[in-house]
Image 1: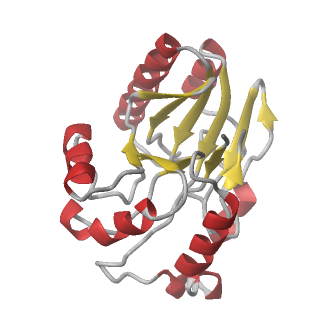
Image 2: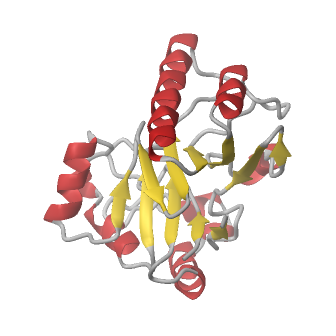
Length: 226
């Protein structure tokens, strides 16, 4: 069994916010992604989706988007992105999945998920424009997730939606300290699109592997992590 990652799906089957306005790369991307996904990912694999899953504003508008995701191969572990306005409490999200019969959709937020020898932790994170009080709040959420991960035991993979670094590629100091303290093995992140791909960091920084998983960066093919 393997672990894959892909983020920023930006689905809109119910809300009709087509992504092709951002360029030809996004034309019919859902079908291309579905083909690539089911060709690469097996039924028993885990796929990490670090945010910006659906353009829906409310959960009731996201049913078709999650039906699409549920129909793809593998178990999915979904964390929150800055455009996921539909996001509710984990209790409501789990109820939504159950009520709609979604068997492969799981949500994670400030918590941890054990998968074989790995522990997946997750929070939204922040960027350089975020005001300090919100950064502080997200740092608390990252710590809560990592603390839960340590209890479960295993190599830690941290899911963040925002990159954990600034435009110069320098890690935000609070996150850098937590990467060291909790021995984070890998951090996957999304959020960067088009020209912003130039700011991506895809290498080991200190002792943590960083990987950009925005679907357009990956050419709509899930990235194998382990």
